[in-house]
Image 1 (cartoon, rainbow, N blue to C red):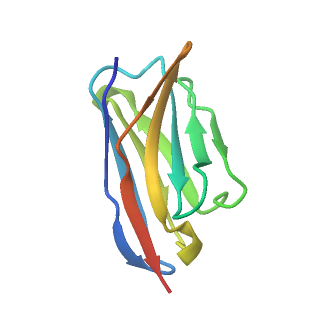
Image 2: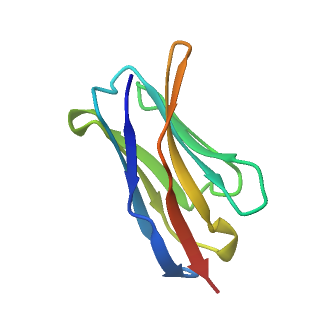
Length: 114
């Protein structure tokens, strides 16, 4: 089992930046970590992932603006979000996967005003 706690969300103007953090309750070095988001009335969607080896993958909508990273020593994953747009407004969820197990955080709200 692993508990995930997101932080760093908030209200920001379009064009601004935020950095989300996801703190895990145990070592995550073997986990594939990711960020997903869910806007009101929409399904949860993929944002970015990072493997244990550091390989990254991004949704086309955030490529070039968002950067996912991890600090295994701190059991933490980050999502640096730059050039934010109103359509980035959503609850952002941290995700951890190892073998067949998947874990989710409680989410953190990101609101981008125009």
